[in-house]
Length: 450
Ligand code: URA
Image (cartoon, rainbow, N blue to C red; front, side, top):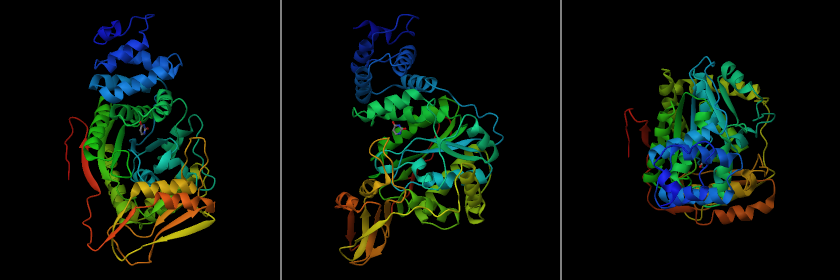
């Protein structure tokens, strides 16, 4: 047994006696546990550039296979929060509550939910990162609105939160910087899909953001990070426990992501659809998920209000316009549109059984709506409009999808992504539930539907 493996059950390393990283890697590789002190030291040294990427990558792989126990996960998350600044929103005059989605195709819920919940009396502090891959990012969608800016300076975030009550903004460099570095490393070392690493990554950023309460939308299905329900539930439990342990009241909803949410997938097209919902219309699935999350957020904030009424009577739309204008956006400006469009038609008549979310998300991404590397630009007008949804009757030759791109050379790659994504059959499919389950933090009441 190595010295570090023996120390793993003991206290933090004595000051000035940093453990050898290779011993920590071996300890985790062999199924041991790391102490809070070892974890604190490791994350801090890694953030400062004193631990080599290859060693952190090896440790991430050991965690991928061995996991982290509750105490390790809590210490890991603490250390990630402590690598930067935890915002203090205690001066905000309304109860703060945020939402985080693990990412889905056509997931424009934040654009509606943030102003909606704020219009009911809460303050919603949403700090986001940029989208990578097929699920797109909230900031990219908002940036399709002419003039709107994601970067806020210094105290602007808390000031807007107090005056408007709804802020969507880019997370600053000092928000959990250890996660920024570690996530980039996990991305290229096949270690993203580890439940403790995902849970600590998401929760460190949300806890550091300073919100008092948080609702997690854990997506499950072909277009989601978590393809199966058991793993989605495990992730939701880990995150709600971390929230509870760090004083953030946290609830998770498990929601379906086998088909895209709503009909629009992209940036400007999703903004347009979000505005439709804020005007009291929009696709039923998008409205259902948004209202379910809004009810959870308002319950955690202790506000008795009906979010459906705020959508119907224009309060949420007015708050959206105020939120956009407060960050330089023009809510009346026309949204950008792509220069070229191409339609995909049904090849048979019957019922649309499947329109695979991952394929639609990948097609939108290849059309230019998403980026492959974080420094790539996105096309605000590119994307996919789904003209039929699973469960709809369709006729042969009827357009099912409209692809939009600035560069027509992109259509071939998008069409290739859609190969095999559509299934049409003679029997009407039984719709599954959109809200699959709910997980409250430990000590809270738990209810799960499925
Ligand atoms: N999103 C995050 O912020 N972190 C992860 O690890 C995975 C998804």
